[in-house]
Amino acid sequence: APVSKTVFEFMKKLWPNGKVYDGYGCMEAGTVSVEGMISAEAVMLIDCPELNYYVSDKPFPRGEVCVHNRSMATGYFKDPQRSKESFVDGFFRTGDIGEWTDSGLRLIDRKKNIVKLAQG
Image 1 (cartoon, helix red, strand yellow):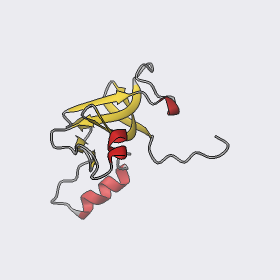
Image 2 (image 1 turned 45 degrees about the vertical axis):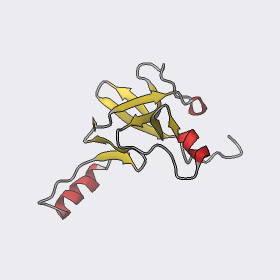
Image 3 (image 1 turned 135 degrees about the vertical axis):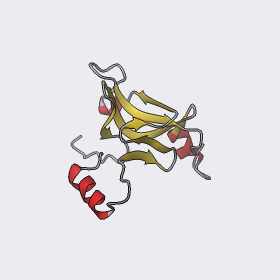
Image 4 (image 1 turned 60 degrees about the vertical axis):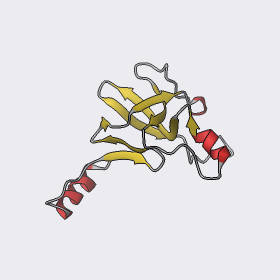
């Protein structure tokens, strides 16, 4: 999720001579965006039927965010099963759900680490 305005302003006060940016990234793929601008080489959405998000959704496509960077990991060390689940066709599946809007990619949900209750 984006940093709240309150936290962002507090950080700027802590480091008045420094630069504070709002960024999005992960260990496996590095930087994805800075200040809302996509910095990854390629970003795509794929369907996430278990959460009812589809690239065909209207008015904006929604789905799991997948990224590709030249310097990203190619898999997990000695964990081929997790590598197979997380890295597909040169893209890393972030587990984040995004929506392409007129102003760019917006994160709206999380696929990974979801706890399902017995009631559904």
